[in-house]
Amino acid sequence: MSEEEITLEKVIEALKMCYDPEIPVNIVDLGLIYDVQINKEERSVYVKMTLTAPGCPVGFLVVEQVKGAISSMIPSVKKVDVELTFSPPWTPDRMSEEAREILGLSL
Image 1: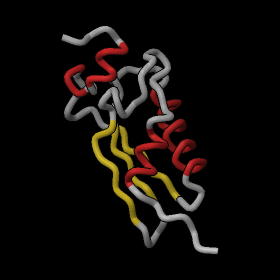
Image 2 (image 1 turned 180 degrees about the vertical axis):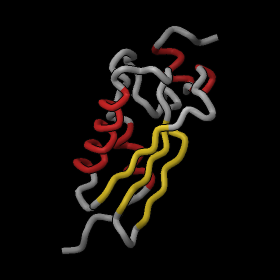
Image 3 (image 1 turned 180 degrees about the horizontal axis):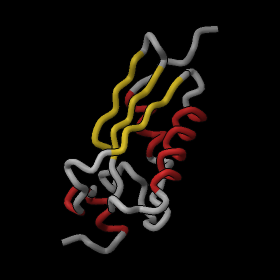
């Protein structure tokens, strides 16, 4: 049996299962994901992301949610590294149009 291929599409699908605890929109549509890198040889995934606010008291929960979602949805992943950054800082203009509609921020 060969191991499941790790693709960007599968990683994004897993990330869409993760939510900021205070906002009913997934972290991808919120624009919190800055970078995703896949190392197929090591079967690892690196995610660079931010939070809506630097002082978010539940930021560690979001990071654990990301690791858990990728690991459970793509069992062939052996390691998930998540880097939190606040440079550049998140702004609402990073949100998808769908997220804007959900939050009532559409123009």
